[in-house]
Length: 292
Image (cartoon, rainbow, N blue to C red; front, side, top):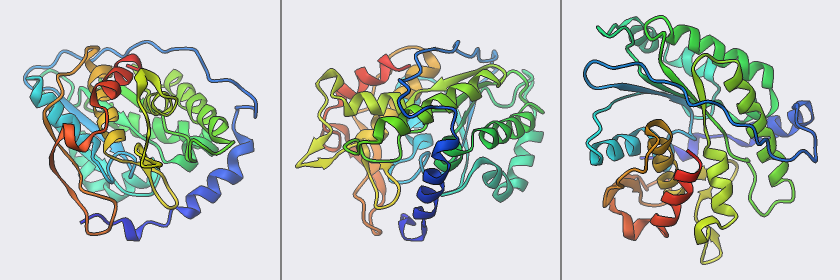
């Protein structure tokens, strides 16, 4: 059962708002256009391994680790999937919650010299948007621990989404802040690239590839009372983006995926027909590939 009732994200929203002016991004700044080089994954002996570190944007209504694993399987791409996920907190707190498990994982070895071949790092919205120095220090801290047994791992910094609705006049300002801060973290992280979730979601909102985010006048990408989390369309987009970004090719998307049955407390995730659960799969796949 989803633990939506235990989240108090209004506090996070207030914190992000109060820190907004401290970001390096000015109010009228346009989206950062610079790109980063694609990180090079180490050569794996056996099935490669990926680690997801994040909070409820990694797993809530839908699960990025689960969807990525299913997409890899459909593409005959072997992949071991690990995750350190805690709702509503930043990277340093995620590490503290999972410290025993994390240190055990960071002590494991593979004969190829890298236990993890890929790592996805997703920081909390208040930190990623409002505390750029803490953002960098948190990523630096966890990367140093990962490098103990995975010195050559390919790291992807999760570009967060604008935390407010697309229709809000300040949507783009927050979007620019989240993107700029993520790009700056990529620059200071060894063998790192940008997982452009925020860009892909923004393109979907803007109607790229003829995608329409409104269904019955409701946002079909994200939902939440205090924090907007990805729904099935958004999760599908994120899953396709993950595969396209890591392997630099379009995935063959499964006919059925583990998706959300709804947004109520008694809803959960289960395997569903993609054509019934996703409003426009092809458009989302194209948007994902364009943002790899």
